[in-house]
Image 1 (cartoon, rainbow, N blue to C red):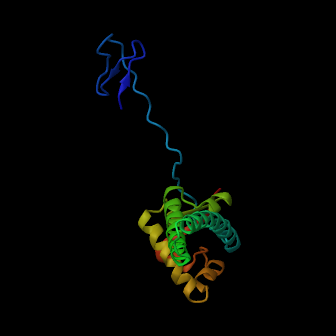
Image 2 (image 1 turned 90 degrees about the vertical axis):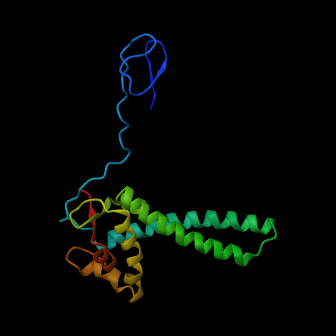
Image 3 (image 1 turned 45 degrees about the vertical axis):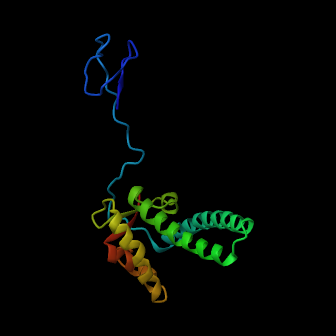
Length: 180
């Protein structure tokens, strides 16, 4: 990052302490503050089944809107170009799968929560209450297949387990906690 002299306007190399033209001391600007700072949470405050279900519904509504917008645009483009509806259907489904994966794994890694969880004051953490890694977020995401495959019993485990963990949470070593 180049430094601009406040006295003469000369752009100087970032390693310099004084302006090459006028000799004025160059002020290094402070590093930008992160938009979101990951934080640790109290692991004794797990989120209950219905609060998590509500966050899931909000997230699905967001993904539905994104999917409808993408699907509509794709269908219009294919129809105008004389493409087949079958291709649009397959591409829309593939986009839906990728969008869901990207939505959950990236937000739970970067913000510690999806938008639905953020709206309800929830955070996804590891067992120590710390932010989760991208790998752990992926294990948690794909572990939801296991939670769903046996008639949804892995999700119902959230209501009955002491730490309010579904099978996918246990598999990934995660907790969903209430903030505050």
